[in-house]
Length: 149
Image (tube, rainbow, N blue to C red; front, side, top):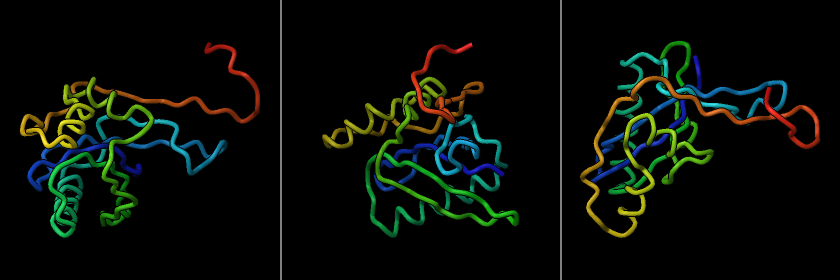
């Protein structure tokens, strides 16, 4: 299946919000650089529950209390969970903005509030409303982008 990417938020040591997407790559251009993310992820709920559980276990081990998380993980064909990255930050490429449109949760505000020591208990899990895509234009040749047909 797809590699999973997205962002989350921790309050008082608990993963209270996560929004995960299927990540797409362009093997012709660069198979390691993502070209897009589709929200919500297509992975089954039991796999996502395992990802949530493993994330919470890591947060507990690291004693992380409040702040943003950026996820990259995958599952084996047998359904085994593997972290690729879990960073204490908001994701790049406008991920927090897409999540705000898709869920109504403002991770940028929450990140600033958390950094200032303000209450972040307003951050709660919300489902993705509809389907959302973030796409980055890549090129196989150098030049100036002229137009999108």
